[in-house]
Length: 168
Length: 437
Image (cartoon, rainbow over all chains, first blue to last red; front, side, top):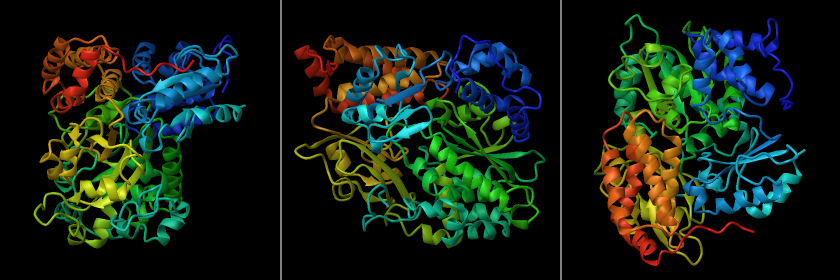
């Protein structure tokens, strides 16, 4: 993932690119172009680290939608980043089943050990962003967390330093 | 099996038999375990016969609503000249529930086989498996299994050499609980905001892309191949003698304050008391169970008495003041104040409300504010009346049931655990956990 968000936006679906071919293949699976919107946004986020207004405009143009429409969809879903985030995006589940098992202490431990002062804020070194997430669907393995695309189960406050030291 | 535990002798292993076996995730491993024989059999049957077997088996939707699966399939009119679609609801996000995740992680081919049979039975050439965006590992497993199936000719334009087209694709969600609601799921699949639609029209008439559509849960579809292979009577061996309305086996996800959290598969009608103590090991050392939410956070909270008197099936849980729901069993022990957990549940619903309906958008937010005020020690006796009044306005008045789901723990909590609320008002003491310095 690239996180240099000061650079101008580099289009993802340029003619002849691998992403473009991937998108074209994807379009054969649906009767409408609009249906490829969520997958296209995933590709953009994967390649650019977040979904900027420029990215929304590009996706809109390749799928024959308006940028405003795309923004409306992006803002509905919590997983699309509308701002740049830390290199390691840490989501800690704190919904009721994890809450009764002590998830709040796991959140505190991540905030403390990453140097993120607040939930949703990126650490000064740009390395971490920590958020609370609603039910990750792994309640029997409290507390589950996600770091970028990776799931880690049964996290306790004591395990947090070791988890963080394993991240590049 | 009680993944991640060794199977308990009283479990009935149909769906979870191969959980934990890495080899079962591959096509070769799945075939070795009898996989795709049911699909081969199905493709040689008239679709109506498949629907009848599923009807006779008594299989009901495992996502929460419990609608009879065969009946749902029979609403799809084959030969109406329209494209039909099957959607598999793998947006598992009901707090307390993590069973579909294990099905997809360990037995992705069981799900694919169920999807293929379901597609053929309802006259659909395309099936979308809508998986919640956070489930990166299940997505990878299902996609790898699909790739194996296309390469082996099980899926595609000439599925298993029969000349029939069956395409199955994974569609990744992007973080929205409401997309587990079937009409919201269809909107999301179409590339829209995940707002639920007003019914009617029902999906079988106008579903995804405006075409006849059936939506089934992962666990429901994964149960279809063994039913087809072994017959309806075989599936009906698992039920209470006096309740033929709930048949087969059911996966339960168990979490919260309990010795052995995890997934368990037991026959319909299993005694809940024995389940909680014998299979799941009872409460943590030195504590007692206080409250049980047996079907995901949206169903009414049970007292321990109610839970211990329940039989685990659709009717058994209703008889004890709650619902089977998704089978996500959340256990809360006597170290917890219920209000804090109800407040947390309300915050969840407020966060996940799509905000279309006023009652839900405003109701979930106000319910959360009042409950969090109580938790902070700033509540008043009038707050309890206000909560009930808001809950009344949130129930039965909106496009979907998210609003009702938020009201449910408030109403059942106040009815059954009022002392927890009153203790907070009387002592004016916060039960917030202070942040670690």
